[in-house]
Length: 105
Image 1 (tube, rainbow, N blue to C red):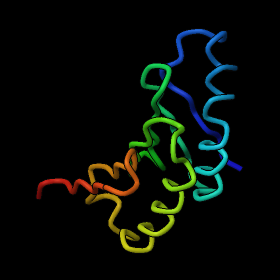
Image 2 (image 1 turned 90 degrees about the vertical axis):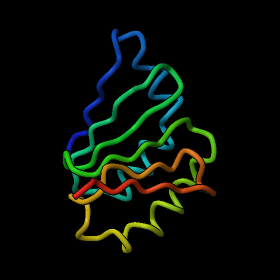
Image 3 (image 1 turned 90 degrees about the horizontal axis):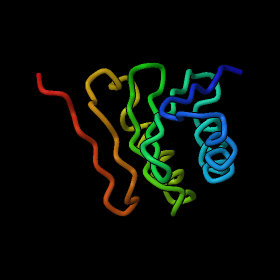
Image 4 (image 1 turned 180 degrees about the vertical axis):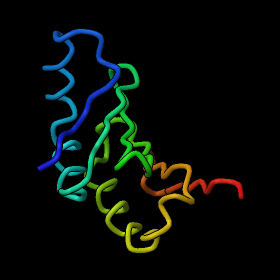
């Protein structure tokens, strides 16, 4: 299994509360991308975003509605397969309002 890299934590004291808060999301992201390099960027204490294989950025947000976010992410992956380099980001913060931002040509 490949590593999950965490960026944005400023002390080891922040690691335990962060990992408890986002445990479900991190486990679900790892299950969707089991063989991929995951870089998790901590945005304050309440939001994260994830870059997969240094290509696909997923703006995750908070732990709220984590199951819905996983469901929508699983549904969209087959649609964007092979197009990661053309996508600036996927925003799943509000699963009912999924946003995919494509790079300009």
